[in-house]
Length: 588
Image 1: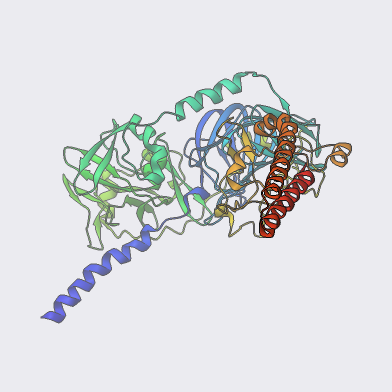
Image 2: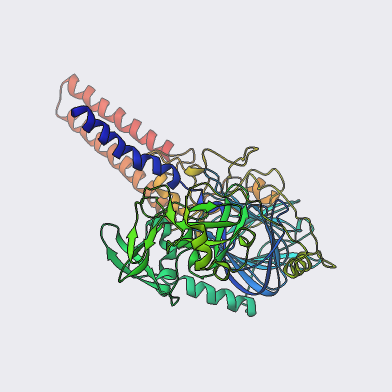
């Protein structure tokens, strides 16, 4: 009997462990979200997968290219990092993050773009390359890039700081500064720019204001907190035992169910990925699970694992279907008003209200909801066997579609545009005010990158700058920061005075020879310097007084007929006094 109970326990424990393999997901930040589209926006997909018209919730992967005509677009990289494109702008997503390597590398060949950086794992992890120069982000901030046809690139640092790298050296561009580069060369030092506004600035400002709103309550895991406001605006949170707070969408369709309003798009590695036509659909279809309850309807349970779609599939020679997974990683079954979240029978009724079924040749239809089969065809299907394996259907690429033709035109090289970008590596050091000659050795130290682009020590670097607590200005420091309590460096400055050290300013050659290590005196030193003469006078007065006292003592001893020991002690005091006076003279 005991053996049977142990065996039963082992079976119960093994079920969740087996399901966890389906719950691991993919690295979420490898897939950027097209989060806002206004006007004509097009995407050229990597791996010769054709062209797409830009739409909200389309996933962008490494190697994709995007272009706008009379339109604007916003791309969300996660962690509140955004790229916003103006009209007639082209960008390539050359590198997107992988697990253990958080780099983002963008190629902007034409137009204007804003880059909002709210999270930076390490300095220079986000880089922007244009036909004129390379730019490496040093801290969180807001950056604008204007790439002008057949002319130049101008960068504006509204917040933060970055390194601008040209073929003739690198320079740091700080907050409220601008710099121009042309064909690999930086045109002088950064300059202060006065506020200027255009339509793209206004649109960027409106997006910033909208995305800066914060929800009063936190119902999502910390990894998903940036979606809180979006879900608050499109649904409500209710408490559902035993899952805690769950989200109920505001929907008006009587037959609504998850993974119905949108379309399927095939990607390398992840396969068929769901692109929701609902603006709020990114988080609830790539994370979490769906349940249903009579009187409440469909509700979403948050989880923090990303996937292309949390569904199970069924297909035959004519039809294909899919069904959302429950909290227990089993296909959801709703028959009548009865909900089953752990249906372990290998077969399911085709009349399951959670199941969506279309013909195989409609899988890539832009509007799946209109393609679902009717009740008569479901009767003929009867029962289905749902599995976690995706259908082995290769995507059809049709570059003759009107949308593909429009996309090719938008992404084509225009007269005066430049398709190649400069790839100038980051410098080992950056001058804070003047351009550094290639191979210089001052300023901010940066990581050395290996051939693979990943660095095991990168997690130890957090910021390239610190704030001076008194002045509020940024102070450059090198990495890693090795703080040793109670010690002094060679110059005699203790560690706790580092806040007073400003960024190194490059001096001219004559200044360096004239005064190689000039240190400005402190206020106390300046105040004490006029008193140095009076100190010497006091020392001389003390010497004369001690000599006169010694003479008086020796004369009084001689007059009283004192012993020789008295005289010797007197002479010893006299010699001691004279030696003191000698030392005073040497000090003076």
